[in-house]
Figure 1 (cartoon, one colour):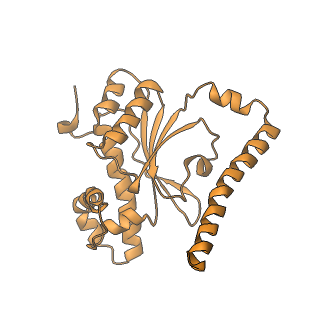
Figure 2: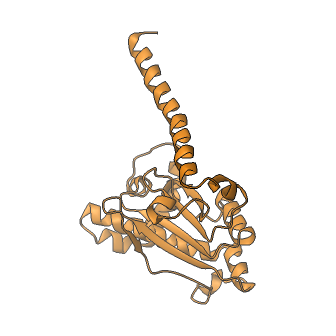
Figure 3: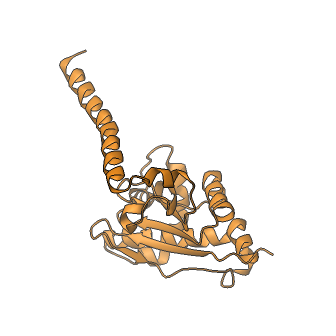
Length: 221
């Protein structure tokens, strides 16, 4: 190996081992605070919330809501998408709603989302282009509004909001959510957008607790 490769290997090894050392420190600090913490955590989970968020490393569900482990069941993907054919997302949703009996499902996007911004353009990225196409459909649905916004940053922010709103609608269209409502299960579906610059979550005010306001063609009996 040349010296450059040696330095790279050393740096990556240090990072890797720092993760393990960080875990040890986490365990120590946690047990110092609550000796029974892990015993209680291992007993089971009954989180009241399912979080569908972006895979972005800067948007950790528990930290930005100040919730302890065990309170939020989490699914994350590029640009917090709800796609009706995504078996991964549907499996998480089904388990959360029908087994864990969560009370709320929250789709959380964030301003400056790379996936959403990439979907605004025409540059090929790779395999992810097939995923971004779902977001482009959101643009198509709201093209008139988005094209009327001259400022690119403002347009991107609004696109992020609309992507969350459409994901909430897509959640409500699923048979999983509609059957829960039909069976009398108390379940709210919500849309939020998080600001990386301020740390503040904005409620998109599109919460649904039944399918009464849904387009008739999507209502299931």
